[in-house]
Image (cartoon, rainbow over the protein chains, first blue to last red):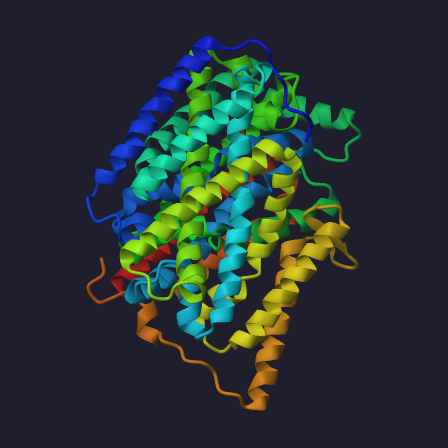
Length: 513
Length: 57
């Protein structure tokens, strides 16, 4: 990634439109506390919105949660630089949904039945193991922190494009203000705030995308011309990347797509959004409705090629904002920037709530204070959400952007290592918690080591196989160890800890609709 | 087992050599791109079909 462009002229009209939308959403964030009114001193009300979100609200909430500001900025940036390879986001966000359909309704059912708020709650109940639950909780929080930081990066890019980079610390001050506002309404309204804001934000993103995919190619001579310009640019650079994948890139492309799809719903912000649904069928319906967002993402990715065709003099994360400024009148650029910045606030809020639920339920309760009242539980979560966001803010303001990007990459590899415990656990109790814990530890160490050996790159060249996504390599080792360990422990004849769930807990209740 | 149909999108999109070509083009889009775009609604339709099957039984 190159240094962001520090535009020295402040775009006042752009900034004005941006400020209006930002203010509107801030009001919504606080008003949300009164929406579907309930006692916000209960953690399931603050942290899961009382599990009351129907199909439409869940569609906006989960869509706004998964397709983040950083995605909008980073995916086209990768396509701009790496061509077809950057498009792995497309198969990834298509196959994630059949997977979601098959797996996540079971998680919702069992969590609803037992009043669980996090995946680690499920692990604790399923395997009767504090340690495995702690491993899952720590991995989830660790993987989420850099993800929150990246949302801030997405916002910072927008502030810089509006000319704040030219002021002394201007972009940083704007960022701090935006984040303090976010922290306050998340604290008071919990998950209701991002759910309500997601409506406005997602509609804005769709307007932005539809305008961009009609207006920009029309000015550049149509899609054929856009692809041709990108093709010529990649050929001129020597053809290491292009409009289609090089033979050596195909395995990396497929494994990145599969690994990312598996990882997506293990992240605490996805789990939080899904568990807030009002029924398992809400999740199933969203499995065929949410791909509408993937269509938007695909069109956003194509902006990487549009930027090449339009000869945008920027690179890295500055590409999309520069393309917006070059293609639209100032007022509409402000609208687009507001959409992207709000696209950071919704996921950042849900991520901090997901992390707060985990810390409260799976770290604070078992290891610090086992006798919390519901009110104390909710207070711990609220304070944790503040601490998590503040940590991310300090990270982004004081450390180089590469740190957050690299840690986010590692976070994806780490979160995949809870796959066997969570996903296999939803279908079978065959695996033993001790074996899963050893598999997890080996997966974490192997994944981190391979990634470090490659100079913090997501793929590793396996002899005889090709270049494979490291998260998937570590996951295969993890599963193999967990299976072998389970078999060995069974030979030893040690008894398994209790499982509080029954088979029917995973199926829909008779009165479900 | 209708649910096995959910594996089709995985096969269609993870077998990259199936679609890693430029021709035939469609509305200016190389095959690589429109093939993947086409699988978006197809995958959603398959999921919908499986959902409907589950609701009846």
